[in-house]
Amino acid sequence: MLSGKPNVQNLLHGAVRRGSTPPWRRETLAWCCGAVYADVMPPTVVFDSDCVLCSRWVHLILRHERRRDIIFVSAWSERGTALAADHGLSQVDLDATYLFIDEGRGLVRSDAGLALLARMRAPWRFLSWLRVVPRPIRDRVYDLVARNRYRWFGKADHCFVPPPGMAHRFIDRA
Image (cartoon, rainbow, N blue to C red; front, side):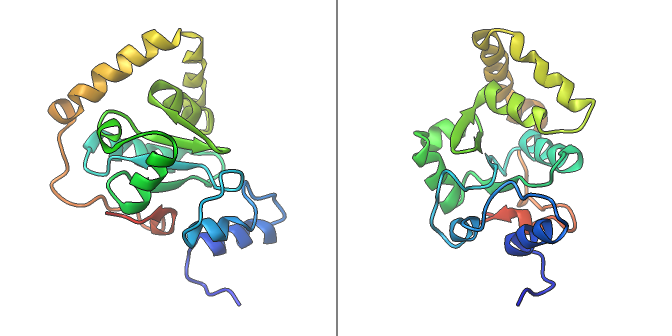
């Protein structure tokens, strides 16, 4: 029935076999096959796969997340732009921020970063307490870094390569 090949279906069924409750339901398989259902979609990050800072952020998430349930989508892929459009973002918007979809809510800028930090293990999750800083101040700092990210960190010369054993969590890599 299930092959040993890692994919979202095996990840989902593996969580069920271990006795833990998966963060999404079986309908997730429909999402992976093309249909998007906001109430059952796994936590998803739509990120700029050309940006070195964004790619490092994704690697940090993969190393330190608590549940290992986040799915990643390149912002420049067909699925990435469609998910962004579903949450009111254009490709121009994706050039200035990334999108984190959690329980059907689309979060951007500092809200997205803090929500992701809250899903990480300590000590990283303690940084999510920066939520007490007013959003306009947080977003101003975020925008400063976003505007200068290519200048400060560079732009990737080659395609984003997921870490070994994690390729199944990257959908529609551009």
